[in-house]
Picture 1 (cartoon, rainbow, N blue to C red):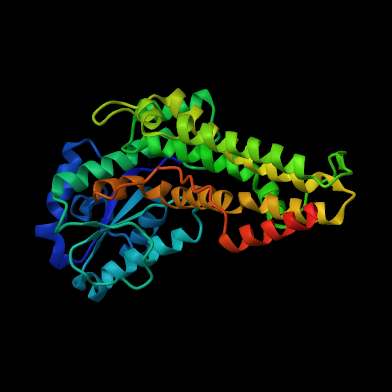
Picture 2: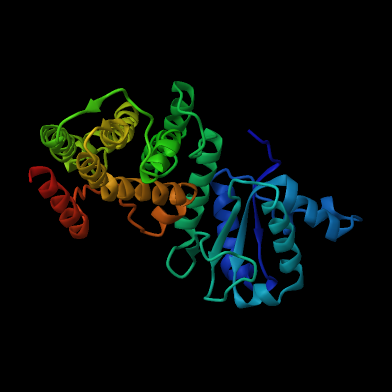
Length: 348
């Protein structure tokens, strides 16, 4: 873990100091956060080149930069220098470190709209200070969506318990599991699988019936057992109750396993050789019955991964992170018609 001299440093316009910045700085200090605040650094900065000193501080010495976004900030020369130093750091660092706090609706040039904001008009000093404290707890746990899932890494996350740690743990298990299946997922939509040695000499009707039963069982188990509200509560905890890390890891693993089962179901179809060309056509169409569910689960994993680094901000802002696994085992009507037409050719 990278060590920083300071936990946070506010970046702000002078006009916003007294009403917006100072109360948060004072509350952070009360919470034990090590804040780099210019008014406290008069002796340190005495005789130094302030431009170079400020640039070095915001690029190297602080863990997070609290950017107080306002119309004054855009116009303030010194604030622009701080922002430029922070953005230069963004080119070097993958993990997030710039934490914007809105004072008004002014857009800050160079800040992507996808970056999560807190809003001083909606979230008071205490809420924002506690959010910063939670971000620091997550940092101390050294846990991101790229962190390998080991007993040690999970224990560190549970020890620090940053807000949303349950979601972060689940997202990490799912994201890493699906990353390992990415090639297989891609091959599914290429309609490719290596030969599995199975050969179908007949019409394939019985094989299609058997495969329908298998797919139905995968669906039934997912709907009735794996991804119910009761199962999620058993892992994540009821409102006001702590989550169970082992169960969260297990539930994330079941998400990945179900995704792989569906892939394997279709892969078995694509890997089989068919003596009858009409049987081959019908089977290939049958494999596409998995498409919508695979896409939905893959999209959910990507969406959850996209918000993983900003969970604290999103939860503090009141955003509800939907962890519901989409179970949309449906078949596109056009595909269903094409499949039925292919089956008719087999029964002639």
